[in-house]
Each structure stands twice: as C-alpha cells, then as structure tokens.
Length: 301
View 1 (cartoon, helix red, strand yellow):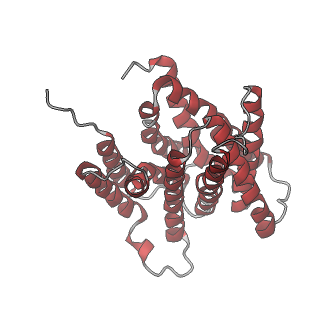
View 2 (cartoon, rainbow, N blue to C red):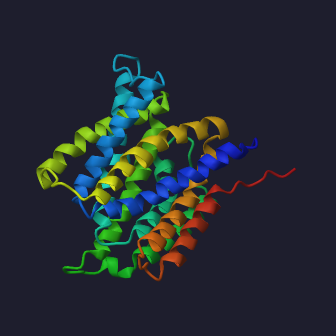
C-alpha cells in the first residue's frame, strides 16, 4: 500500500476527532432540544450545507432519468433512513440516559455488524473462520458493554433500553454501509447529499409531529446543533471522499479505532461523565475483534 502521506494522516485524525466529538455535542444539544428535534436539526443543516458545497464543487444530485438513476435514488433513500434519520434519532434518545462516551464506544461495533450482513447480502463477501472468531470476540464486548441487566425487566429505568438503542444505531449504520456497497456506481458526494436530503424529508415531519416547533434554545445548545450539522454531517463527507481518493478505503477504515477513544476522552474530560466500569474492558474486546477482522493473512512465499 502506498504511503498515505502526512496530509492524509492529518485528515484521518481530524475525522476521528470530528466524529468522536459529535457524541459530546449531542449531549450538549439535548439540554435545549428534544431528541428527535436534535436529529432533525442536524440532518437539515447538514443536508443544506452539503448541497451548497457540492454545487460549489460543480457536482449535481443523481439524475433520476439516468439508466441507474432510480436505483441510485432508492439507495439514497435507504441510506437516508439507515445511515442518518434512524440512527441519529436512536442516539439522541439514548444519550438522554447514557454517557456520550458510551454511545461513542457502541460505534466501534459497526464494522463487526457489517461482517454477517455482508456474508448474506454482498456477493463475494464470506464469513471466514477468522472473521467469525473476530465477530464473536467483538460481540462478547457488546454483551459486556450493555450488561446483562439490559435483558432483564427494568420497569421505569430507561438506562438499559438506552444502551440497546445506541447499539441499534450501530446496527442501522451497518445496514446503511451494506446499502452503500450495493448502490450502483455514482459520485459519492452526490450520493451523500441525496441521502441527507431524503433523511431530512423523513425526519423533519416526524419531529414536528412528535415534539412540535422547538422553543428558543440556549446559545450553547444552538451552537452544538450547528456543530453537528456543519462538521460531522456535512464537512466530514468532503474529507471522507478526499481520503478515500488519495489513500484508499482501507486507510480510511482505521478511523473506526479512533472514534470510540475520542468520544470517551471528550465525554470524560469536558463533560465530567462517569462511565460504566465495564466500558474499558468492552472497548478492548470490540477493538480486538475489529483488529482481527482487518488483519490480512500473508500468502506463503
């Protein structure tokens, strides 16, 4: 693999920090907005911002009348649901009861969830013995992470359900990744903008129906919403495409190791969050399974 260069390493670290900090900013935004409104606001701001950015770059939305146009828009709608509207809502609701660092660690499970889904839905992707073992190691980390009490009757205590919601968001991201891989070839920025626009159409009416028009929020909550819409939802898409083009998708995949670490650091240092005692053990198991799934076996010389 060619040397990615210092610029791509800097972009990779920046992506990890942007996505890792997003969980902290969700917690801040929830002080002034209801959960679904947080998801709707960040998606709407992100969709508008990304659309303006791609138009400035000379990129247009997918052409509906093109040979694969309808299939691309169908994929964009599915991505809007599974990669944006549904997981953002689950995370926002979940973070009303669990720490932002916990939600960030859950995102490390996404590549592990992709393994069995890809086995059944992506041609040529098979669950090898090594991948199967890595999935079991990572899944054991998931069990440690949510705790056995998540499977018990919890009455009025929503913390265990919130843990499951955060993992549900990770499963949504995995489904979204499969949809993205099955989508016909098209411009990635165009597809991302179309997906965000579809997500906005889906989530904004739900937010207004369930929670109404938000009251005037405090300045800090509004700043958090602007961050969520502008950086992790819009700007990060530009950086993501640049890194893939310059250094390849395998290099980009290393961001999966960073996000949970940054989320824990930001939550603990800036929000003074008290994290579950089993979090570090589960993080080690999940990242260990992820590392094993990514390791390549050298052919004998």
